[in-house]
Length: 117
Image 1 (tube, helix red, strand yellow):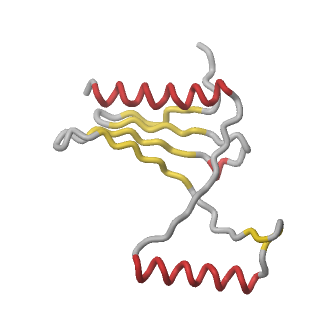
Image 2 (tube, rainbow, N blue to C red; image 1 turned 180 degrees about the vertical axis):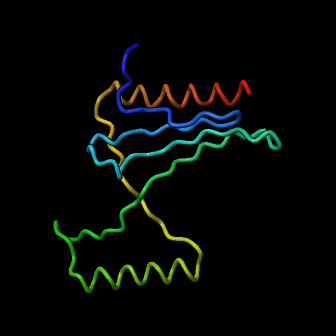
Image 3 (spheres, helix red, strand yellow; image 1 turned 60 degrees about the vertical axis):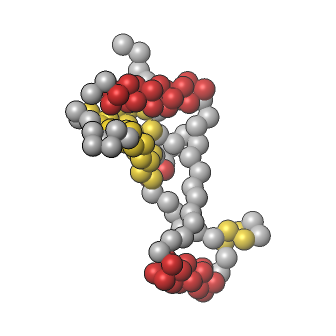
């Protein structure tokens, strides 16, 4: 059996499949867990990505000062508290074409699994 690069099935249930996809930077904290689940009541297939996101501010090719960083984090926390949302983004690196194909294959396999339930 050929090893699969960067993708591992971590759970399989009657109505859901979970995969862990490794980030090519080799930092395990950057990995993504994908959950593919079908809800019998609604008929919807849910595709959920679980990812740790680092809160960091980069300015002028370097890290901003400690006090400015804390002030920006405080402002974002206040926005979250009073509006209920903040916008975040995080990069996920897939360099090898085989790794990308394995990511696609995991999505297809999971979709077929929950559709056939």
